[in-house]
Length: 80
Image (cartoon, rainbow, N blue to C red; front, side):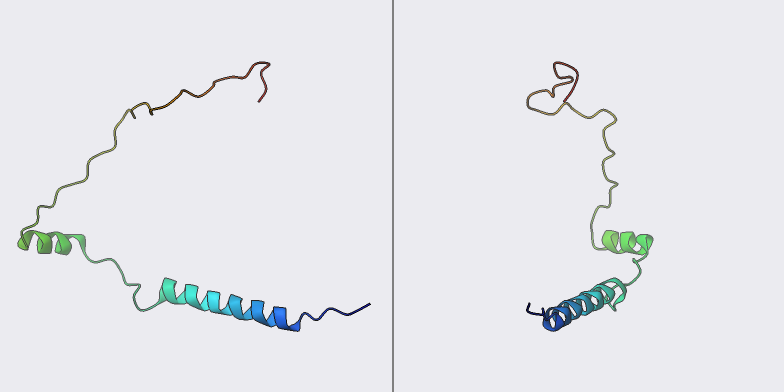
């Protein structure tokens, strides 16, 4: 019986794992990942540029019924 060589696939998968880990760490903790700017400073800068800063609309307390057919509540015989 012929022995299987796993050296090359193992090296490729290890390289992919190392590159993926390095990319994740760079994206997550890299130089472009800074703390968020101060909200009041951002608001003041926007207002000084002439923008109107208004709060977002609150979500509806009662959602509208979706368009389309109604779902079946129960099946004949009581099982799905």
